[in-house]
Image (cartoon, rainbow, N blue to C red; front, side, top):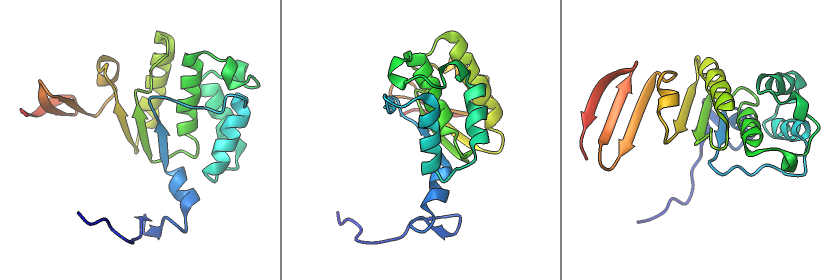
Length: 172
């Protein structure tokens, strides 16, 4: 196989190389294993990550801090916070600059049931007109909120659900 030696990535008809902050602002991501800057405070981390996405209006940071119930931790260093609070921060940072595409890999790990409900309710509301892809093992919490659901597994094959009705099932 021969690897490509050149090319150009475009988003919305523009070169990604020339509009990197725009591209960064349109994609949010939460990995399974989050690594936040442990010595930063919640506010400083969100402000810094917002600036990387080309976002300089602090109103959205304030709104995310409020929406994810992070106000009491605003000036607390990340390393002093529980796994659930750190996960809420990770989700909040993925929403900076209101991205059109959100990729979540096990976003609820380490959260208690109240935090999980808060995150799912927020993401369900946020999803209007956007694309959110979440890789999860526990589907029960997500099933009611999803418009489309794809289940994958070596034993069960692939199942595609659309509008909460079974559309196609095919075996592997």
